[in-house]
Image (cartoon, rainbow, N blue to C red; front, side, top):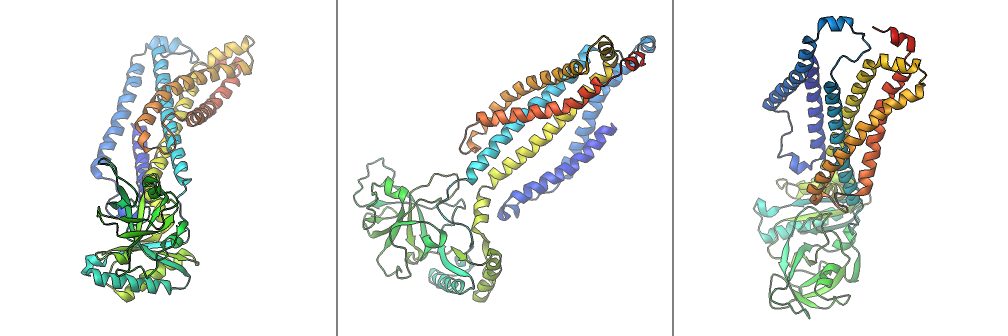
Length: 477
């Protein structure tokens, strides 16, 4: 019971640490809507479960001890095995189960960590370093579209005047933030059948957008301030758009329309390299970009400021600019672009880190359990080991005897864990990126790591068994 209470108290510290870890991995926008604290009802349930488990697993050894034959116990030598073989098998079974669970969790953690590594290596198609982003929504603060457009112009000018600002632009759809705008398009020279998908992602951006965020312009030109509401309608498309609508490299100069209009009233003036639009793990979709100045209904926008100074300085200067223009206008999502990209894959990071933490904890418990069972087994077999040594067995053979026991439990537990890992990998396949749930490298590394831990846990009992003094063991009572 005392051990159960101590374990329950220790679990509270682990729970607090886990909650703090989860909170540190979540985006600030998500964190504001959630509460990460221990619920008293759940703590009480965990306490009852901890004490009940300790009572349940402590009751059987206690009953066994009270049923022992007193005369037999007095006559028996302490070096003899007094427990039943079934008890030894039960202890070994528990350790095998711990090893199997560790193998399953280690493999799952390896899959998620490799998936996260694959995500981190994705070519985004843009240069996010030294870019600060934020959004404003004057339309929600009572601005009409005309006043909103005027405010956007003033914000753009004020940001461009900040020390260190090398480029300032804007976009109606924030980059790699999970947002999607779509439109139905018609393209010159592309004949759409009745079942043809003519959908495309859509974004309204400011002058110099592609250069500011590091998207490579392959042909044509950027948008300028001259692309206003009164100017001819223009668009820039990405490679995926050109491929889908059979434009190739000759996209520039073609005409198209958005929102399903029959009139091809928008000229394509640029072709840009593919870049991630909404999500890091998403295939690059067809995207058409148009100038936000040609939209009469825009009420919110996201700005991007590339800086030659440390981004922290720009993060401090931007709120002052907006305060001068409209002190009552809230600043939304002020952060660096790398931070925004990092937050867009927070679920992958959280799953990877938490699964690795749980796998490490399970492996530690398996190592402790294995050590305890082996140490108890060696103590129970002290007389037997002494006899073996007295009859000529060397210390190396005794060590091998104990390590064979370790290897047996590790192999059985590992094989059972592989089955569990395959089931977990299959069910978690939708969360993995760039690999499947049967990745051989991950399974091999998990098995090797678990094997090393098992051998390490068994080394001390094996060494202790090899150092038994035969005469002392034979006289041991």
